[in-house]
Image 1 (cartoon, helix red, strand yellow):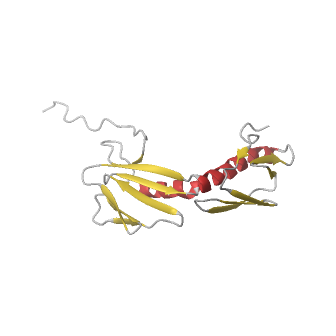
Image 2 (tube, one colour):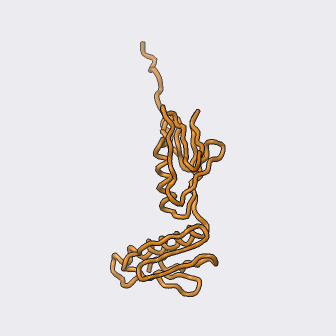
Image 3 (tube, one colour):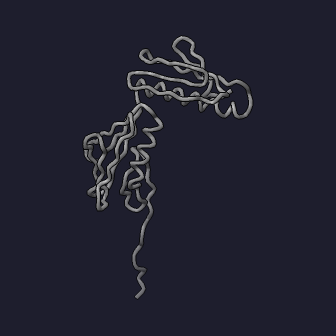
Length: 182
């Protein structure tokens, strides 16, 4: 049995779950999410908990059991608490700001980079160098943060660029200079 798949999912007080065959819809104070799960897994609601079980013990069913449970748990957590991803900008003159919901990045290019938020995503900037991406869908929050990071990923020599909060960038030594020969 999958260790992750057999754990029950507790439903918070303000969250409503609707199960229709393989479709699971979750509605909460932050928003509303729906997902169609594979036919190999069954989602059942017992009181204020959800249980994800598999139909049989075939290899595809075992592979999808833990994944399906995690997807449903992320939906429940997202509509009740939400998710956020923090990014740090390092480099002289590199900064970010929010203008009317759109994220504007000054990253040393000849132009500013404008990133419009997808539905359900909000941007916040602290101290011009810390960007917070928040929303109720974990997948979209992560993809949006990855797109922001891809504008200028951290380079290995000086570490300049956009990185996730807590990300460790391996540094290279760089050039050593002339070798003393004349």
